[in-house]
Amino acid sequence: MNPLILINYFLPAALIVLSFFFSIRCLFAHDMRIEAWRSPVKQWIYIDHFTFKRFIKSLGVLLLFVFLIIANHEVMNLIQ
Image (cartoon, helix red, strand yellow):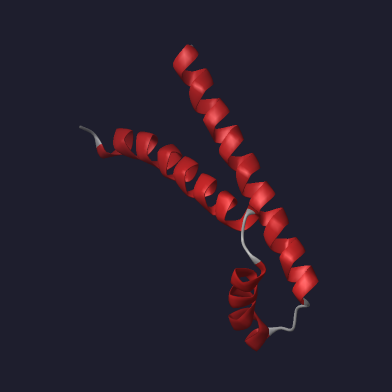
């Protein structure tokens, strides 16, 4: 099989899986987990806990939106 055709199938599949799992992880993260993610970032820049939590939740929503768009695109390609 042609490697370019394989990339055409694997890239959307990988984006779907990664965006779905990372969005679920970001949306349902506990405060202790968010604080653990914030500690390495605090070494470079200071970011407030509430601001970082809001950033993580909005990143989760964005990744869920990416998941839904790619899944919709793939389903529409199957229908055609």
